[in-house]
Image 1 (cartoon, helix red, strand yellow):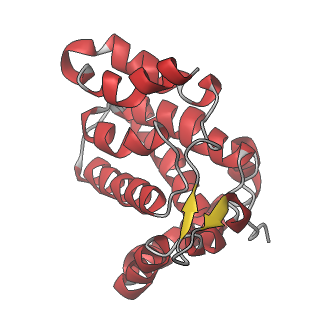
Image 2 (cartoon, rainbow, N blue to C red; image 1 turned 135 degrees about the vertical axis):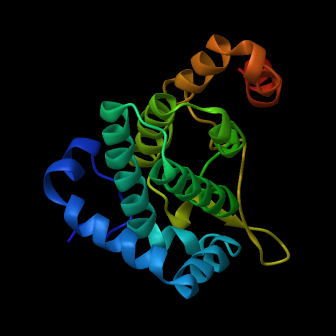
Length: 191
């Protein structure tokens, strides 16, 4: 049923499991208790890793629906609903430490992005990173206080997962330029 931790190729989800993922996302959106439980799991790393199937379902359906909006060239209440779902997904994954720096700043960029930019970021950054770096409890280390943390020095994403963000910011430097030093300046110094 593809309920494990790994995220498959995006094309695979389009062909095999999109109906199931639409159902999972609908069930999650209609149940406030389930959403609260997901946020609670995110606040206690690495528990969110075990909800990978729910996160994957939300991301896959967002990609599917946002592509449909691109075809229709509309900005509607449905698009606002998709943006809200994107914000919730990104905030949950950031809180659960599943997105390393600079991918964790996608949440701050999301309100400024167009539908086509959101599709690019979801596919190239979030989906591909999570597919290649399985959200696993093994990525987290336990400190002396018993808290689990993801070591930022060991989870730096390669440029293939951040180039899309970099290009979007550079293309829209007048509007998004303030995010560039926050997201990329330290990465360039550390490389």
